Image: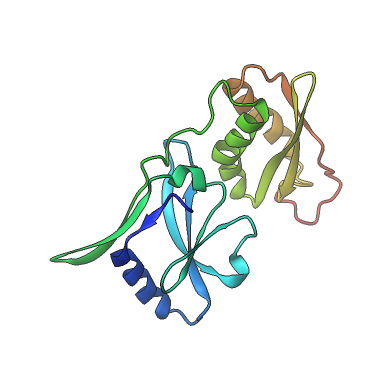
Amino acid sequence: MSAITITDAAQDYLADLLSKQNSHDIGIRVFITQPGTQYAETCIAYCKKEEVKPEDTVLGLKSFTAYIDQVSEPFLEDAVVDYATDRMGGQLTIKAPNAKVPMVNEDSPINERINYYLQTEINPGLASHGGQVSLIEVVEDGIAVLKFGGGCQGCGQADVTLREGIERTLLERIPQLKGVRDVTDHSQKENAYY
C-alpha cells in the first residue's frame, strides 16, 4: 500500500481533467524532482500507458490509475494530494512533508549513499543533456565505478564532468570514498551531447 493519500475531491478533479484528454487509458504520475534536497518539488503529470515503468508503484483509484515513481516513493510518505475550492474556484494542493528529507545518513551503506547523491544531485543536472550516470559497484579500494548513459556516453566532456562535477560532489558528501572511475565505452558516439 502506498504512503500517499489522494483525497476524493482530488480524485474527482483529476478524473475530470483526465476525461478531457484524447486518451481513455491515461493515468497520472506522482513524482518528486530532486527528492531529499532543499530543491525537491512534488509533481503530478499525465501518464500514458507507454510511459508506465515496470518499477512504478500502481495505485488503482476509483476512476483512474496513479503511478508512483520508484525513486520518489519513500519521499512521498505521508503525502496528501487534495483539491480545495474557494471563491476563486479551486486548487489542487500537494503536501509532501518528507520530500526534502534525505533518506540516507552516515550509517547507510556506501552504495546507497552514492546512489542517493547520483539521483538527487548529479543526474538532475545531467538530464538537461539527455544523460545520466549510474553506479556499477564500489571496489575494495574505495573507488566508485560509474557508467554514463544517454547523451553522456561518447561525449568529449564526460571526463571533465566526471572529475570536476561528479567526483567532487561525491567526495564532499561521502568522506570514505577515495575516487570515481568511468567504465563507459565513450567510443560509442551516436547519442552524444556536445
